[in-house]
Image (cartoon, rainbow, N blue to C red; front, top):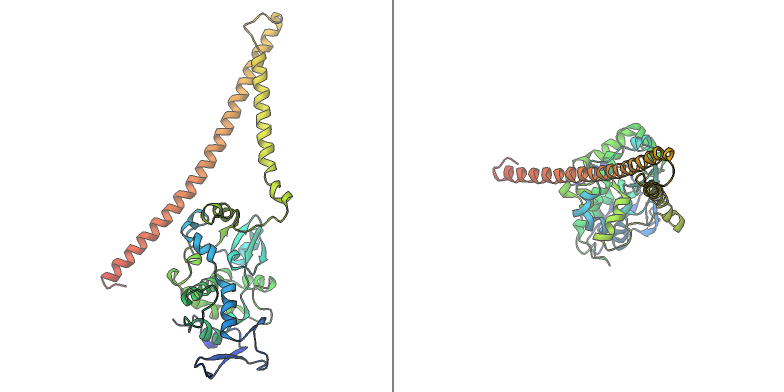
Amino acid sequence: MLIPFSKDHQLNRQLKIINPGSSGSPSLIRTDDPEYRCLPGQPRVLLQSSYISQQLQREFLTPDLDTLAPHLWLVATQSSSHISPLHEQVLKGCNIVITENPELHLTWTDNRVFIKPVPSYMLSHAFWTTQLVSLTPTSTQSVQHEPPNALLKAALGFMRTYYYLIQHDSDLHVAKQCRLLPSSADITLEQFHAFIAGFGDIQDDEVSPRYSSYGTLRLSRLNFWAKIFLRRFQFYRINRQYGEYFARFYAPILFSFGILTVVLGAMQVALQADVSGDRGTHRWVELQEASLWFSVTTLICICAIGLALLFLYLYMLLRELLFAAKGIIRRKRGGVQVEIAQKDGLA
């Protein structure tokens, strides 16, 4: 596979390839300081294949989301381009929160969206040449035993998200302000576009399952479905205190108590308003009839409101499921058309 950007368009020139050593494989050296044998932006990672391989796995692999990939249609829109540019994230009132956890990249909850910054070394053509495109099974052997293509697909999928995140000069300004790009690089929009343009041509089958059909993911839904598909209580724990966790239940509980109080009060009035009996004088009959009518009307209104809310929830849920099902059908039809075209020699 070719590197998605040319050497002239790289945004980091701190690395270069030196002649192969005794192992026969090329190695990297720092151009700014040859004696400094650490990865740019990662002073704890040495410029050796074993250390770099472990670093790449920590930075880009998303095993949990890859496991959830067949079920992510329940969580988000089935489109890898469903990623709002950074200026739209700000326009929607979202606070951009930096995360170094690749599983949280482009997940959102409430008014927060989690975005992983681009590592400085990922902007280097020499790094891609020696560590990603030229991956071999021996160079990626580690504790996790991930195949080389899985690591490359994860890196391609991650970088492709920035093709959608940064589209305008305002997006680049937000990226620099939020430190999503290396602060040491003075990058213009033209330079970034020349670098990232090739990633926009990456197809869904060339990236990892997490990025193949999905962009932004709702974290609350991930937490819900993780109980079923990952056998975990939560996908990622946001609330660090019990008070914050239980606070979200207060409103529906109080609402339920309020509804029950009104219903029970109306039932009590209805039971006490006995117009057929001889209790009280004739002048109280009209009041008893009005109380009975009002209590029954209240019960009917409460039931109607409850049913309306229930049907509204079911309608919204059904609409999302139908939308997801249509997306699956469209993708399957598109795949069938591609296969037919390939058989006919048209693709």
